[in-house]
Length: 193
Image (cartoon, rainbow, N blue to C red; front, side, top):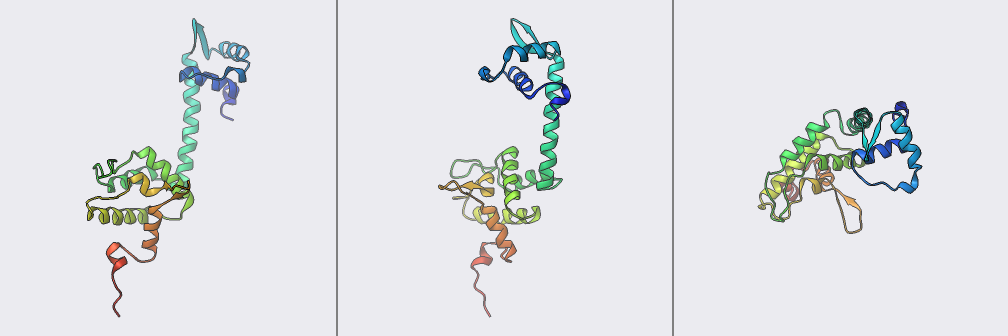
């Protein structure tokens, strides 16, 4: 485990984080005196009226955080593709940079969208090209309706219904592409034989 490679326990790391991020911690769960003494012996924290993190302690926290961030990025790349970050931005920019009639912004932030896409790619088997086509169809459809009842970029990917079940309009629009239906006009057009 990465934390143990710095010769500290998870409890000691947790305590260091609580000091660094200035959050309170349930001290009943720990032998706080022992944790503090060991961290001071390793010069990771110091006491001068209050406990604080030393420069060396900050380096340890940053190195451990970086390790886990790299793991998360690797996991995201495996799930959503190597260029998922630029694809999330490209998806976001398909939506207009406006406030919808509902009062919500059409474009949500990239971090929120990335979290929604993690769920989407874990749940459905669609690729980015199909996602872009489906999203363009959706946006074009609602542009013709002056954006009335259009979902935000986040809620188009996924939204919980009243029964707490996640549903995806994006997946439905991707399925329409799979079925050969390019847009709303194609869907309602009569087949003349």
